[in-house]
Image (cartoon, rainbow, N blue to C red; front, side, top):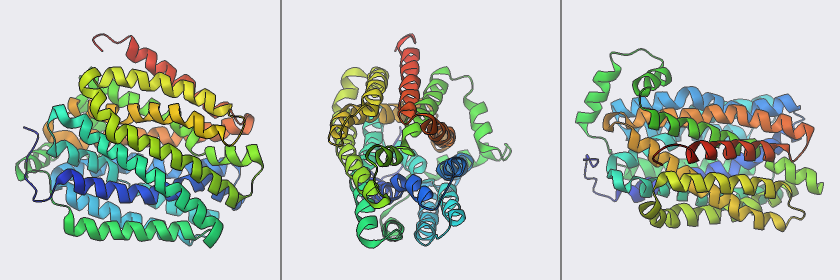
Length: 401
């Protein structure tokens, strides 16, 4: 049975609040990274480093945090992650050089255990048949976080200066840390923690490799994990260049580019919250994760092409609809497929591996996107579309989907 403890408070509501507040802070910062780097005079290569250093650190540390959460519980890892995020946001706020900006993003990546541990938390307190619904709550938190975060970031830059987004994000994260400390209860039973501790004590220190070896014969699980890599790679081609694309297309100053980018991402966040927080709950029981994943992949491919060709600022709000719909199907279904394929005592480690693969993709995605953007502004969108189309064909041709 997947439910190992009976917390006094509703566990899904508490973890949703934790992820929601965290994602608002994340949503404030992430759309600004590229144009902040350009403001500090970063070259294309330096922009690529700035855009990928967070994910490089997350790649190495996310599986470690996941394994530690299996051994010591979800609560202490989430609290430690939030504390590190507070420090990284305030460092971002007061960075006055490109070097400090890079250090702040590296520190943020080291402590970015929030999402993988939250997914493991949900796996602890939900039955397998309800797993996609639970993971959809994290998707909804993403959607709402990116609804509120980007416009807050853009408006605060325009009205209060370039340090304001980091101060606001750090303050929200500090509030989140305080609330989580008093409200978040442990979800993993002592028995499962002891089993994970005994299992890990017989292994070495390379958590990602160890976890990969333990699941190497599970083809369905491997497909879901590698699909996470390629789906994330496709979308991360756009994440770091989107604000630059808007700025270049309409010849905007930094403050106006931040504001206009924030408005589009706010609209996308509203759509994502509706899809992942509500629609996915109705679609999964009827169609299953695999079929919805295929639909999401092909929808996203089409949307990426349309997005790159949007002729006016207003048209971005139209092409954002299929883009958000595709992402809203892809993310929770992949998370659910990975969680269902993992053993009960290794949820944290396997989900940590999945998040590590996402981080690896976000190392290569921004690098690919920024280099491609230097060749042609629309090229990153075509790279993304090709990648998710190929992935969709793989799933379409897989037996027993």
